[in-house]
Image (cartoon, rainbow, N blue to C red; front, side):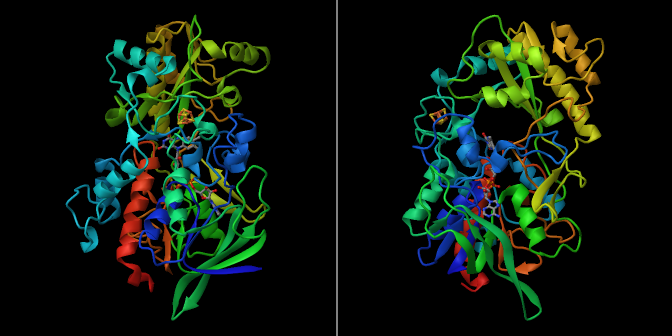
Length: 525
Ligand SMILES: Cc1cc2nc3c(=O)[nH]c(=O)nc-3n(C[C@H](O)[C@H](O)[C@H](O)COP(=O)(O)OP(=O)(O)OC[C@H]3O[C@@H](n4cnc5c(N)ncnc54)[C@H](O)[C@@H]3O)c2cc1C
Ligand code: SF4
């Protein structure tokens, strides 16, 4: 057994873990170890081949809900989701955080740059967001980086009087290769691996990749449970990864402060298998997925869909009234084949038309349902995701689908398809040949296995709330039940953060990191 000792152990190197490692290392006098289950793959390795790049994804890109009905994508490599995501950057939404303060008792997280949360100079969510935006270069791309597929969405929205906007993206001098989801071979996408984690490593943080933490070490001290480290295994380094900083084999790390940043699927799983108290039965419950419904438009001519920035146009026209977005995105053939409807010859014919297919997605801001959850399956030793759309969410998604089909026709599509085999109205499947048929979407049932919705935005499984009956951590991200354990990642949002979550997660991590640096003594450090 390899044994290491440090002041701070950070588990998971994604959006949150990467930012925390950098922020805590700014104080310069603490020994920090950052561990990551996946490998350390960098630009030389990213060969833009979808099959090869499955190694960057949780469960090799095959992760899905327990019933297999909803693909749930997540990054599992240094940088986590930020290494494979498509850079869509939304600032934290003030109204959402105000709602959390009201409903979950959250304190701090000021949106005013002059605030001093907890009496700490410059501590506000506004400053943290500004600092994150600057480090990852969030900006709107210029006109010449908007590809055909995105222009079609903009045009379709404009002709129906629906507001469309330019995304902001965390990129620097993007050359528009179109392969963000396979890792950026040109280091233009500003994920945490090449920004915050690079800063942390330069300041002496030790990165151990291929390190799968099996258990948190919790001890009883003076009648209280205290986190003192973690135990796991370092796997042999996968070909293509950078070398590791420790030899493979079992590993135990003792730490003064443990910060869990494993993401909304693995963080609750690790807490549950480590015996973290759960007196109110809430760990893992209330999972948010941001279910996405792809809309496909068959055009009469070739369009540029797989080159250029995949998402540069979106619409938040229906966000306030119905809680969904239209977001322009496109998948390369392997992922597209999962989403294109039909089987056999029908599916083959659709794939032949790949270069004439336009696509965007409806992204639903889903509501909390306790039945939607992550569990730790002790028998098979794996995290299991259970999720069903609620009846009110289905209703909103029917309306969204109707509007989306109309937009795709307005964009010039000859036919519009949903990834579904459900008969609706007079149609044997949702394959529409005229805009008037869009109203048949009101009959969609979103039956598992019949209609494909996808997800890449898991959240809300280890909720933050001042009342321990409602949440596992307090506003400082501290466990209510275990001393010196912070949980800080997408899992702690009490409900959906209201938009694509990356910048909200990074800003929250920056905020908590700055707070910890001002409050080391609170953790005996
Ligand atoms: C394909 C894709 C596209 C996306 N596009 C966007 C987008 O454009 N904009 C946006 O805002 N969001 C996007 N997202 C979502 C966003 O990337 C995630 O919400 C975000 O990365 C989550 O941050 P996190 O810190 O909670 O977890 P992650 O970034 O998932 O990081 C968690 C890390 O912890 C590691 N880990 C887990 N368990 C253990 C363990 N036991 N031991 C050691 N390590 C462990 C994991 O391997 C992982 O690397 C996308 C996601 C995907 C998958
Ligand atoms: S589109 Fe731009 S940011 Fe994305 S992988 Fe290509 S060069 Fe990198």
